[in-house]
Length: 108
Image (cartoon, rainbow, N blue to C red; front, top):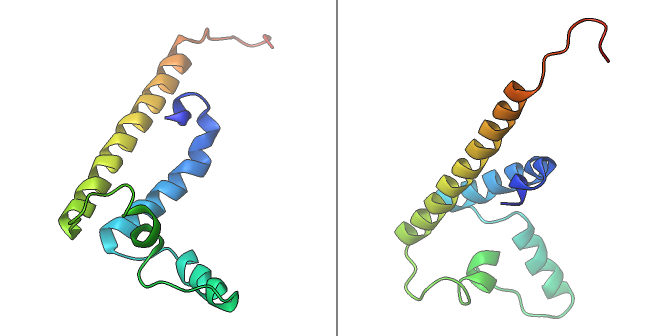
Protein backbone atom coordinates (compact mmCIF):
# COMPACT_ATOMS: atom_id res chain seq x y z
CA UNK A 1 0.00 0.00 0.00
CA UNK A 2 3.03 2.25 0.25
CA UNK A 3 2.94 2.53 -3.53
CA UNK A 4 -0.20 4.65 -3.15
CA UNK A 5 1.98 7.13 -1.26
CA UNK A 6 5.22 6.94 -3.27
CA UNK A 7 4.99 5.45 -6.76
CA UNK A 8 8.72 4.72 -7.04
CA UNK A 9 8.28 1.99 -4.42
CA UNK A 10 6.66 -0.10 -7.17
CA UNK A 11 10.09 -0.61 -8.76
CA UNK A 12 11.23 -2.36 -5.58
CA UNK A 13 7.96 -3.98 -4.59
CA UNK A 14 6.82 -5.53 -7.88
CA UNK A 15 9.88 -7.75 -8.45
CA UNK A 16 9.85 -8.86 -4.79
CA UNK A 17 6.10 -9.54 -4.87
CA UNK A 18 6.34 -11.48 -8.14
CA UNK A 19 9.18 -13.59 -6.75
CA UNK A 20 7.19 -14.27 -3.55
CA UNK A 21 4.12 -15.28 -5.55
CA UNK A 22 6.22 -17.57 -7.76
CA UNK A 23 7.71 -19.22 -4.68
CA UNK A 24 4.25 -19.84 -3.23
CA UNK A 25 2.61 -21.14 -6.41
CA UNK A 26 5.48 -23.30 -7.62
CA UNK A 27 6.70 -24.41 -4.18
CA UNK A 28 10.27 -23.14 -4.58
CA UNK A 29 12.30 -22.06 -1.62
CA UNK A 30 14.08 -18.74 -1.50
CA UNK A 31 17.61 -19.10 -2.87
CA UNK A 32 18.92 -17.36 0.24
CA UNK A 33 17.64 -20.16 2.51
CA UNK A 34 20.34 -22.73 1.58
CA UNK A 35 22.94 -19.99 2.00
CA UNK A 36 21.59 -19.13 5.46
CA UNK A 37 21.59 -22.80 6.52
CA UNK A 38 25.15 -23.28 5.32
CA UNK A 39 26.39 -20.15 7.08
CA UNK A 40 24.61 -21.19 10.30
CA UNK A 41 26.29 -24.60 10.15
CA UNK A 42 29.71 -23.05 9.50
CA UNK A 43 29.18 -20.88 12.58
CA UNK A 44 28.42 -23.96 14.66
CA UNK A 45 24.67 -23.33 14.79
CA UNK A 46 22.15 -25.98 13.82
CA UNK A 47 20.75 -25.84 10.29
CA UNK A 48 17.16 -26.59 9.41
CA UNK A 49 15.22 -28.43 6.73
CA UNK A 50 12.71 -26.73 4.44
CA UNK A 51 12.50 -23.07 3.65
CA UNK A 52 12.69 -19.78 5.51
CA UNK A 53 8.89 -19.43 5.62
CA UNK A 54 8.37 -22.89 7.10
CA UNK A 55 11.12 -22.38 9.66
CA UNK A 56 10.48 -18.83 10.88
CA UNK A 57 7.08 -17.59 9.70
CA UNK A 58 4.75 -20.60 9.65
CA UNK A 59 4.90 -21.28 13.39
CA UNK A 60 4.12 -17.63 14.15
CA UNK A 61 1.74 -16.45 11.44
CA UNK A 62 0.18 -19.43 9.68
CA UNK A 63 -2.35 -21.62 11.48
CA UNK A 64 -1.52 -25.20 12.43
CA UNK A 65 -2.35 -27.70 9.70
CA UNK A 66 -1.42 -25.39 6.83
CA UNK A 67 -1.87 -27.31 3.60
CA UNK A 68 -0.63 -26.62 0.08
CA UNK A 69 -4.16 -25.49 -0.77
CA UNK A 70 -4.12 -22.97 2.08
CA UNK A 71 -0.73 -21.71 0.94
CA UNK A 72 -2.01 -21.17 -2.61
CA UNK A 73 -5.14 -19.50 -1.24
CA UNK A 74 -3.06 -17.06 0.82
CA UNK A 75 -0.87 -16.30 -2.20
CA UNK A 76 -3.99 -15.69 -4.30
CA UNK A 77 -5.40 -13.23 -1.74
CA UNK A 78 -2.15 -11.25 -1.78
CA UNK A 79 -1.99 -11.39 -5.57
CA UNK A 80 -5.54 -10.02 -5.95
CA UNK A 81 -4.88 -7.35 -3.31
CA UNK A 82 -1.75 -6.20 -5.12
CA UNK A 83 -3.47 -6.15 -8.50
CA UNK A 84 -6.25 -3.99 -7.03
CA UNK A 85 -3.77 -1.55 -5.48
CA UNK A 86 -1.70 -1.23 -8.66
CA UNK A 87 -4.86 -0.89 -10.73
CA UNK A 88 -5.76 2.08 -8.54
CA UNK A 89 -2.28 3.59 -8.91
CA UNK A 90 -2.45 3.33 -12.71
CA UNK A 91 -6.01 4.72 -12.81
CA UNK A 92 -5.00 7.62 -10.57
CA UNK A 93 -1.99 8.36 -12.76
CA UNK A 94 -4.07 8.28 -15.95
CA UNK A 95 -6.69 10.53 -14.34
CA UNK A 96 -4.10 13.10 -13.29
CA UNK A 97 -2.57 13.06 -16.79
CA UNK A 98 -5.98 13.81 -18.34
CA UNK A 99 -6.62 16.67 -15.93
CA UNK A 100 -3.35 18.49 -16.67
CA UNK A 101 -3.79 21.58 -18.79
CA UNK A 102 -2.52 21.16 -22.32
CA UNK A 103 0.27 23.57 -23.15
CA UNK A 104 0.74 24.85 -26.62
CA UNK A 105 3.97 25.68 -28.41
CA UNK A 106 6.03 28.35 -26.70
CA UNK A 107 5.02 27.42 -23.14
CA UNK A 108 7.61 26.10 -20.71
